[in-house]
Length: 67
Figure 1 (cartoon, helix red, strand yellow):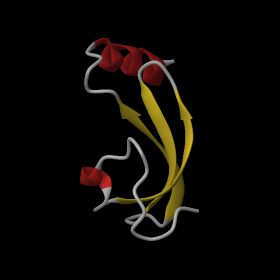
Figure 2 (cartoon, one colour; figure 1 turned 90 degrees about the horizontal axis):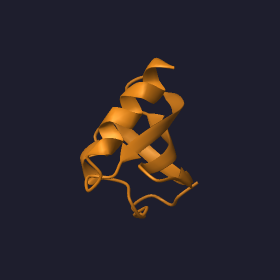
Figure 3 (tube, helix red, strand yellow; figure 1 turned 180 degrees about the horizontal axis):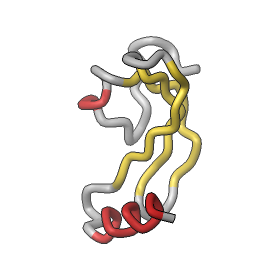
Figure 4 (cartoon, one colour; figure 1 turned 90 degrees about the vertical axis):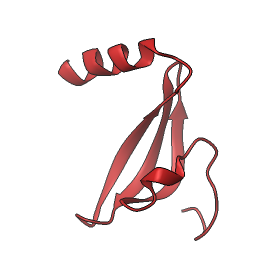
């Protein structure tokens, strides 16, 4: 688990109100996946963060989501 206040490379601060990031699970062509806790549900979750500089990442994510 990442110590409180630590910054994970690629984790957007905008998600801090909803999630507590614990660790990086992996990186790929379109982004990164982090293990986190959803503070609203109290559950461990995987959060996928897309790369902003890859517009095709959103389309790939939508295809992956539907599969």
